Image (tube, rainbow, N blue to C red; front, side, top):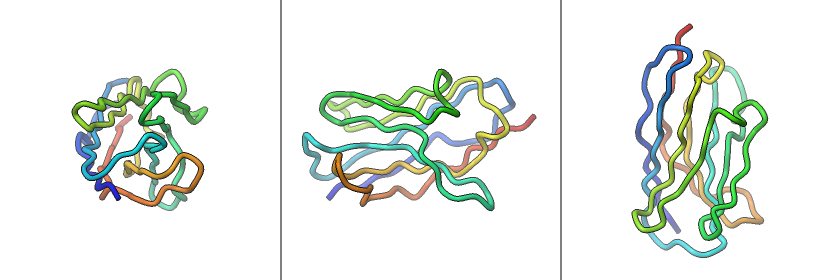
Amino acid sequence: QVQLVESGGGLVQAGESLRLSCAVSGRTFSSLRMGWLRQAPGKEREFVANIRWSSGLASYADSVKGRFTISRDNAKNMVYLQMNRLKPEDTAVYYCAAGPATSPYNTWGQGTQVTVSS
């Protein structure tokens, strides 16, 4: 089982950028899948992006494609979410998650708040 700690959230204006970080500790394995999900007030948690720990293969929600980039640094046990051209609708608590590639996420971080003002 891995443990996850997010950092990097904050308050920015529309059009600005933020980078979220997720520190991964514990036992990783080749089929591990890392993800970023978010939850806005009054809404369900939604997928943002994910990446395979071993291959680096990534996928994105349509709403963030072309603006957000997920990456991982295996040597540092870190996962990142670079968020560019932020919009007010990106405002949410962002969660780092981990799990086997073919199963639902089974480990979550505590979340980090991102607020984008217009």
